[in-house]
Length: 459
Image (cartoon, rainbow, N blue to C red; front, side, top):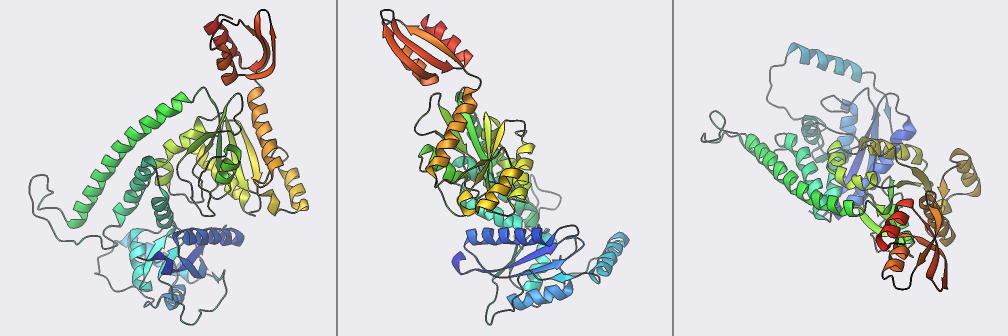
């Protein structure tokens, strides 16, 4: 399927107590997600609703308006009538009464262009399997929800074995309850036999069992990969580590490249980075400081993806310092920062020392910068295009790790081998002189490193 030719209609639902500006921001973010998939957004529809639990999410009028974009019938095709319980009938009546009071709003108030039809409809909320089925029946085209779009992006961007396994687990968990509704398998009964259920399993039951078995296999593979990652992390526990965390596309990878000189992927797309990258500051500092670039966050990030990427986020949990990178030119960055804090809170990383990086300051006016300085007095303003800003951040990081160090003098006799190399690796040499006793070094180091070197080389 050529995704470049796909034309998408975006649909948003404004719930009570949700400001319109927040809805518009969420739809703008969905549009960027859709663009990342290669789709073209041809229009947006929104409607105020009391909830999203109805059979169609939208009211009948809005559903017919949606069908004009897709060429669909605008109504749900008749299904096999099943006897409803009294409770179900009562809930349905309440939903119908609620629809009469709904107020519609349009985010993008442009008429339907001549000949412009949507190939896919994407909702900015999660849809149940039955809602997907009903909406596709009324629209006549494929319908996706926000979670489905995010999982598809993750699937395309995963590169390392761990990321691929994590995304596959989340994708299968998402697919499992939707097999029947999306037509993934007929309802015929399979022959009974060893391991069968009663007279036999239906195709859907068989498919679901295969998915459960596959998820179990993937989790076993992932545990093996995670053990290897844990070993690598344990080797770095003595290192000074800084983790870049924040919303997707906030500029973490650009900052990583600027501070380390590494060729990490930098792209103006959501979720361009899914795999944690660890690199030392360049030029290399003494003591060495490692910088890690982590997967970005987003509003309504599917829980399965948060859970499956737990091991990736552990890189942040093992850091000495967290740098919350935000796009200061984005008017919604405050809510983005809150999303980042909430996700990190799920893994217990909020107790770590942290600093806020207000990135992309070159896109702000002086008055905007001054206003933000008053609101975030402890924040670090920078642009990755400004060498002075990068130098200042580097010095800030070094001061952070030096605050618990102390100055000391060491005398290394000329006959002692390897001591000077070890000292230069873990300590900052402030002064170096020579006399008849040997090399005299004035250093700045952590107490444990001083004691270890003195003991190792009998200094």
